[in-house]
Image 1 (cartoon, rainbow, N blue to C red):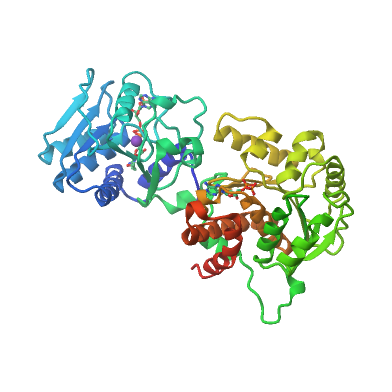
Image 2 (cartoon, rainbow, N blue to C red):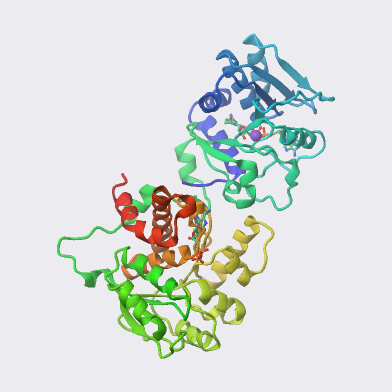
Length: 505
Ligand SMILES: NC(=O)C1=CN([C@@H]2O[C@H](COP(=O)(O)OP(=O)(O)OC[C@H]3O[C@@H](n4cnc5c(N)ncnc54)[C@H](OP(=O)(O)O)[C@@H]3O)[C@@H](O)[C@H]2O)[C@@H](O)CC1
Ligand SMILES: Nc1ncnc2c1ncn2[C@@H]1O[C@H](COP(=O)(O)OP(=O)(O)O)[C@@H](O)[C@H]1O
Ligand SMILES: [K+]
């Protein structure tokens, strides 16, 4: 699914109106019908609906919603903010229609606003500003937002919480943004919904398909997508009757040091549960028995060192290599890592301590072969690129790094972002907070290594790997719950995740 900018979303409305013989006011009526339906599914008529409408088409939506729900016998109260005396045509039409419906509980605010008391059972419908917001809210509008936010009422925002920008909020004023419990977003999600620091203003969000022109959406240029199950299903390579293990690749995992053998174990298990033909784990001698007894399917190659990775492995006969989980950062490991990476001629995944080592030796970053896959969580990324003040800035800098190194970056967290060397970002919808537990990232590394070894392209391995990993996390969460689940449960749920994805239509 594409994510378009607010400017493009306005163009999409205009294109739909011009090319699909629908009047602007009728498109708004369609949006309002869906908005009213979504609101009535959540809130029954015992709730008073207090509607705040702004001067543009977001306000027009809100007024139409007020009329539809009033006619369904909801108790409704409307405040229209007309401070400049300039209302959009559709906003004006909907004032007229609201009055014609017999609705009387209407206040137009042009100057002094006498705010109504809002109780905890009231529902605020926020239609102050949508995709037409040009700059942070200030003055009277900021005061209205702060009063709504200070109230105990539930808040439903139309399209986007008023005051929030669709993309970059670096220069926004946080206290002047509506804090919604539910955002009913029209047609497409906004990029800013996917950023952690906006979760408390966006709340839960839901998309409403109002039938914006498919033609426009398909031809619109964007660098942002949300991955869909059907796309991932289509990537899975079918297995032929006469398939043998030599066809599914031989991967090399370089992982584990003294006290961190578990990371090698988790990554190995995940790798083997994701379809690889053969797996060799290169690990210090201290982890030999652990791996042999707990993942008997894997071959173990002992490093020369007892306790840490000390000598680069020979890459002949492997289709892909992953380095990092539980690697440690011993001086001798640093040297071995640089040797391994500098001479790597097969697809490479760098995770965890491998990334931490590079963050201490940033000059060496350019030794990473083109198209390698880096899988940092936020902290690991910021050790390389420096502290960022918000998610938009972090994403922009991650894109710069991906372009500079010509690498793939998998920026992990909720909505994990897979960033390609040419700057396209795919956000992953699967996964849950139960995955915020030790070793979850090691599991992902194993999955991606497995896919690369099987001949999936770098981009496919990242996107499919991240998707299935999150799906396995969701299955583990259903079985064990968000608190009790461990990363081992995620690895154990991989077979069910693969099966579920393969059964997706
Ligand atoms: N048929 C359609 O088109 C459909 C449209 N749809 C709906 O329309 C919404 C977009 O509507 P929109 O383009 O009218 O923009 P909107 O967000 O209402 O704001 C514009 C007004 O705000 C003002 N303003 C801006 N910034 C400001 C600030 N900082 N402080 C104060 N004022 C500020 C601005 O003033 P101006 O800048 O023009 O002086 C103008 O008056 C979209 O989110 C969706 O809900 C859907 O129903 C689908 C069908
Ligand atoms: N709130 C969340 N929602 C979805 N996925 C999450 C969430 N928290 C963590 N994850 C996923 O769990 C994994 C955690 O990886 P990482 O931080 O490297 O863990 P570790 O270092 O313990 O292995 C990542 O794939 C991340 O996307
Ligand atoms: K809004």
